[in-house]
Image (cartoon, rainbow, N blue to C red):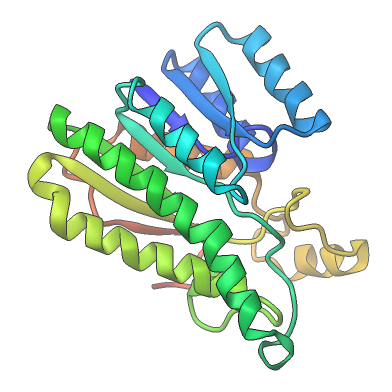
Length: 241
């Protein structure tokens, strides 16, 4: 299948690119054209003949629009919405300016909406498609302190997934969500002392890894179209929907 993964040069995105490329799928992935990420993107393309890196900056409207134009030629079967701009932990609700809410929405939700709309148009014509949204465990119960913007944006995306279920199941398009617990990546680094305490209190005495979550993405890629509308927490059963 032809699969697009947004944010494929680090953390969960990179692990998913490598896993699905090894499965023989053709993988498109987006990356921010910094020196570090460009180097990773080039290395992935050298390693896998079935991988194509495409630069994308969620913070620039013309970059998003240009990316969507390119998507129209990719004959996509699967979209994995993985990119998030910023950090999960910012500030307490009362310390955030209203403009920060607008900015976080503009650079996270609007690009994801545009990319997903483009993918849906492709999939409608094929009468087949799978959309996999990476959410977060923080939308279950009470989110951690300082997760206001992150949790709210992810909750919006999860509800948008429900809308896609309602409107596009008749086109044989599925939309599923994965809600992973904390993973130690460059996206969400915590102090070593806090990390040690998290590991001690974890029921398995070890934190979730990107490889474990990428296996869940692979499950939805491989699953029957009967698997639709699922919200899958990956947290060792510590929080349940």
